[in-house]
Length: 218
Image (tube, rainbow, N blue to C red; front, top):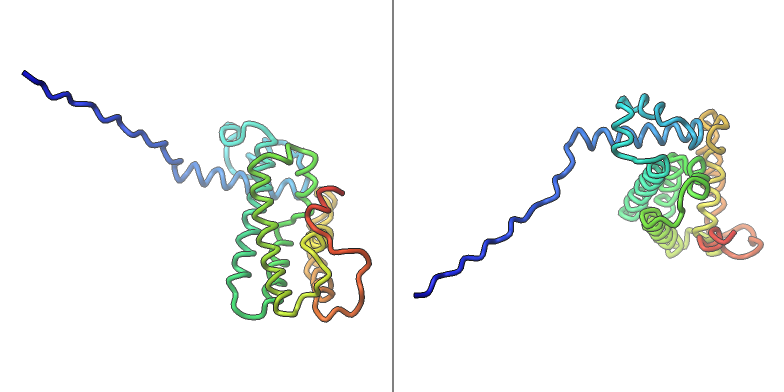
């Protein structure tokens, strides 16, 4: 007599998704950290970050086991928003140079210059999350610039590195040096720089176009 053998189907266990309130707390921590890193630098006490975010210290450490993890998340979130701004610029169907201008002003508002020093001094700048975010930023900036260049509106002798150097240097002074008081100059000076990117170029630039690889090797 034969008996049917029933093989039990393994139960598929899904990783539980974070609760909405947990996600909101994480977002508040990252926002507060970015504000305080810009104002005071990366060494601001995490207890102060928790206080500004309106959460307990334990909530901060539950989301970010150490300072490096929090700084990395802040930098990656800034890069992600920069990518979204670039994607919106690419989606615009009008003036390609106007789209480039809008993107640069939005990127400057992310206070990149105050956060850039943290990439090289605070944690592993070759962390996979950071490298992936960096690649996305570089790719979208290249695409925005290529579109303006193809339209004959962007001078051909500038590269992504030239743009990023200018945005970083003109957008904010380093963190903790009264950077917020310089806000009223930022977009004025950026627009002066952007006007110098228009084609036809009124002068010849010394040297060659700067790439992101050039900046990494500097």
